[in-house]
Length: 289
View 1 (cartoon, rainbow, N blue to C red):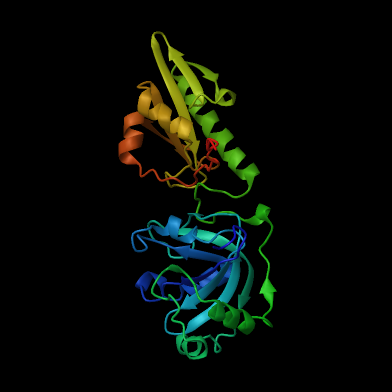
View 2 (cartoon, helix red, strand yellow):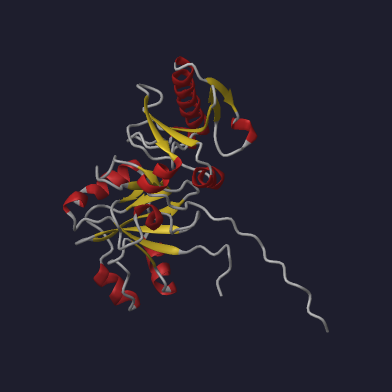
C-alpha cells in the first residue's frame, strides 16, 4: 500500500488532436498551467485537472511529439477560465517548478516503451503513470533542465474573469461590491435591509417590506460568467426555505449586473458540483475480549 505522502506521477495530454487544442500547449506553458475543457471522458475538466494532489508530478504530453515538459501540482485547484481554449466548460490549474524540454527534443512514446517496456497512458487527459521504472527514466531526462517557479499567489488571477480568484483580497472586494449593489437595489425599492453575513445562517441579507420577508444570498463574480462557490449551508437553505432568494452579481467591480433566482431555480438552472469533501475519522467500538 502507498503512504499518504507518496508523490504520484501523472501524464497530462494537452489535447492537440482537437481543433480547439491545436497549439494550445504553448499557451499553457507560457501561463504555467494545465488546462482542459468539455466532458473529458465523462469526468469533466474541473475534476480531471484536480486529480493530482499538491506535490504530485505532472508530465505534459503533446500528441504527435511526446512528453515536452514536467511540473509540480500545487495547492491551488482548478478554476473556470477562457484564457487557453476559449471554450465553454474550460478550467485551468497553476503548476510550479515547470521544466520545458527543447522543442526538438521531446521524449517520444517509442523511446519510453523501448527503455522501460511501459505504455504511458497518453489516451487519457490526466492519467496516472503506474510504472516505477518509467517514472525514474522520465525524471532522469529532466534532471538537467532548468525549472521555472510559479509567481506569488498574489499575482495569480483569472484572466478570463472567472469566479475563483486566488488572492483572498480580490475575492473580498468582489463580495463587498456585490452585497453593496444588492443592498442598494433593495433600499431603493423601500425594503429594510439587515446584514446577517457574520451569523452564518445560510444567506447574507435579511430583507423585509411590510409583511414580505426574503432571505437573500449574494454571489459576486469579477467577470460576466454566472459561476460561484456555494456552501452546504447555503444550498440547504435554498432547498428548504421558500423565502430564500439568490442574487448573482456579475462584473461586480466594473459594471455590476444583477440577476435574481429563487431557491428552486438555483437547483434547477445551475449545475452544482462538489469541490471538496470532509473526511472524519470513524469511531469504532472497542471489541470485547
